[in-house]
Structures are given as C-alpha cells and as structure tokens.
Image: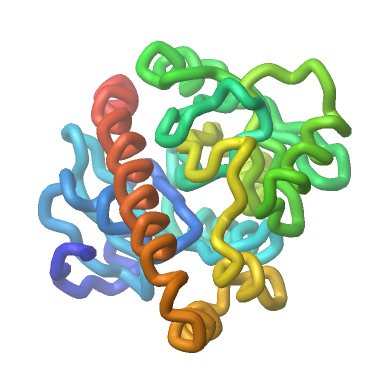
Length: 254
C-alpha cells in the first residue's frame, strides 16, 4: 500500500527542482514510495518525497500513450522537473528475458515509428545497475498473449532485449517537448512465452484496465483468482526491483 501521506498544494512544490518518477498503474506506486522519506500527496496519485537525498515527484499517470502523455505534460508544466524517469511493468518480446529483470532502455520506439533515445547521462548511470539494456516498443494496444508478443517481435527483428509497454512513448514525447532528460526503466512482468490472465486481457477497455471488470470476471470464474494473485505478487516483485535501482541513479543526480 502507498504510505499515508500528508497533503500539500501542488503550487508549493513548483518553486523547487525535482526529478519526476512516473509509472502508469496505482498498484505500482507503493513499492516506489516504500523507500522514500516523508511522502506528501500534492494531487491524486501524485506524491512529493525525498529518495536517496533527492527530491522526487512520484506519480501514476494512467495507462496508454495518450493518457500517460497528457498527464506527463501536465506535471512538466506544473513542476520544475530536472529529469523524468519512466518506470513500470513490461511484456518481454525477447525470449531470453526473465520475469523481474529490469531493462534500461537505450531507446523507446512508438507505434507510429517515432524513436526517442535515452538521455546519455541517465542511461550511463542506470545501465550498470540494470539487468539488461534494451529497447522498449511502446504501443497503443496491449500485447497480452505469447502470440501477440511474438508477432510484435517478428515485426522488429534483430532487436536485443526488447520489451513492450503502453506508456513510455507518451512520457518520452512529453519530456522531449519540454526539453527534459528522459529514461525508461521497465521490469519484465510476463515473459515472451507467457499469456497475461484472460480476466486481465479481456478487461482492457478504451486503452485502460477496467478493474471492476476484472473482479466481476473472477467472481464468475473463481478458479482464476490464483493466477490474479500470482500476477499481483509478480507486480510487487518487479516494482521492488526497480525501486531498488533508483537510489543509485538519483544519488548521481543529486
């Protein structure tokens, strides 16, 4: 769970320089904030805190490139961010990638073919601690089955340590427009050979996860509860892996 924060007006942080740490899902916030000191909620799913001696703004932007991009642009407009780090879960496209491995993305490729290269300084500091360096294919729809991931990987042959997500392109584009350094750090949730649970795949609507629909599907088929609980445990482990890498990256920023 997210630590119980105090409330703070957004404008109170606007006069300070902070490093933005973004994720998509509210479920991903807890592990990121667990090691932070004195989290203060400045807005819905947005927290200011100190991590490794650096002031950070940790926020869940929502799923999908458009929603994530709009929220990132809003945060960039309201706060003086000196860097933007996009974090969260990803599906593996490369068969060699294992669950929980953290990928420092040397570049993000969007569904329209646009490419955003990682900030050189951020990438140089993150890559020694990451499990692998690779490429994020940030799409506008979920690739939730092994077949869908295989098709996406086949469309981009020869890319080593490739993963797919839904938000990094939105964050990267917003950072580029604002002239702010950006890096994506993604942890593998599902390997290339794995399908996400059907209850999750069938509950994506309008580019976002309908959590009520997931629960209803599970209630209609209680046998799916174990795989949903397993997915939740994987989510926490993966985000804890990312959270463990952030202090070294942020200390270098300080």
